Image (cartoon, rainbow, N blue to C red; front, side, top):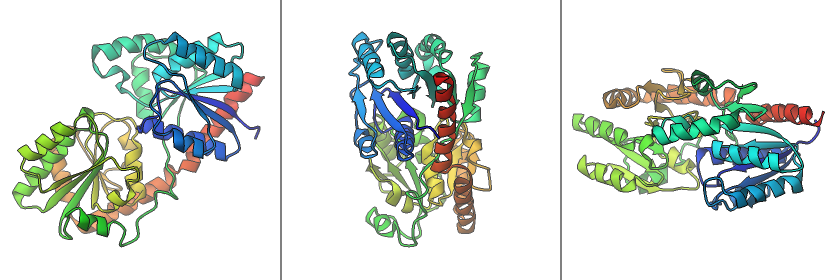
Length: 378
């Protein structure tokens, strides 16, 4: 294969799902011998070190927000300097910058857009108003990549007609996220105050409203009132932390819910849990749930976004209607059965190995980007 020459354009390099996907994709393609670099618009560079260690240089365009013309000029100059064959935007904001900078550069690479969200039109009238502007830039991309079929159908239902779309599911590094050994997580579990008889439910997510940590706490409070020895491990941090702590106190769960904070390596914390949960009211195709499944953990997940493309109810996890605390409690009550947990955990592991391997994802993007690059060069 002719080596690819790619310039990814991102909003920022914070620790989020889209940004983690970018790091995996960019560094994975660099390992395959392609020339890859990243331009990020805003000064948040937590993941820059991971990119650079993966031989992917990154440059900040120092946008102060909005359509920053100085940042746009910097991006246009970078395109002219590097002469990539393909620009790859990873958000609708960076798509706008990439499309406009491309028009202002003497060198005109092809443009692809990896769309990670459906929330761009769900967060009130302001988001919907912005989408009316951004959707024009969707049409300027030679290809729009969705991360789930559900997401592709969602945008089609909005009347967004695009010439070329693809669905490429997220993938994870199965060598890094491998099932824990028997004693992995045992010491941490004890250190966190969990006993061998406790059913420990884990959730790794930023503390934001749409993640609905409060639903999990409410369900656990209900189960503990029934006499179940169930506890919770929350990994992450964010703007909702104070409200989550207040909810924990109000439900009298101070001794039953551990807030572990942000963790760069979540694997030992997942290993310390018996079951993992997703309680979000909005998702597209989360990477965190794939990580749980790769570690052979049974999953209880809200039936949102593309979760049905990950989870087959009763085979590799349990689904419940988002926001239905009683249904969540019922799923946790059911999964307290050890044989069922073992069955679902092995089903989860088999699913990830068969369908969501990072190398399979990289091969799909490599073929797609090669086609777009070839179309531009010819």
